[in-house]
Image 1: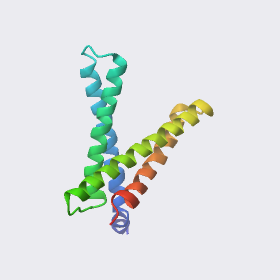
Image 2: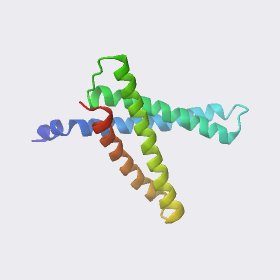
Image 3: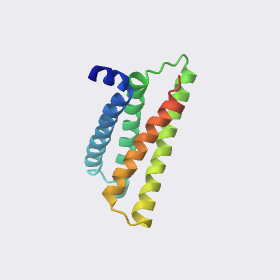
Length: 141
């Protein structure tokens, strides 16, 4: 019974597992880059943005590879198909990043909701949207 459930929900389980690793990569990459770049002559605000941008890119790249290979088992026959798939994946992640920003802006600045509570709600929505976009748009079979 348990094995049947695991097989039935394999994609979702793998998506959540690799999503956790993606989050870890984002946090670790940001921390390492921020510490290293902080020792340079760069403006501290610039350091934060550069470190965060590179960490986001590395995390999304990791997410793309793991989603392609293990979660959605996507095969691309040509380089053009691969490039389109990558572009769609990154575009979807940019779109859901904007959704996250909008939820935080409205939740915290307009509705004066609890910051961490709003971030948790936003992350749940973004994870669901990322999965749906990956399933229906990026890795269509």
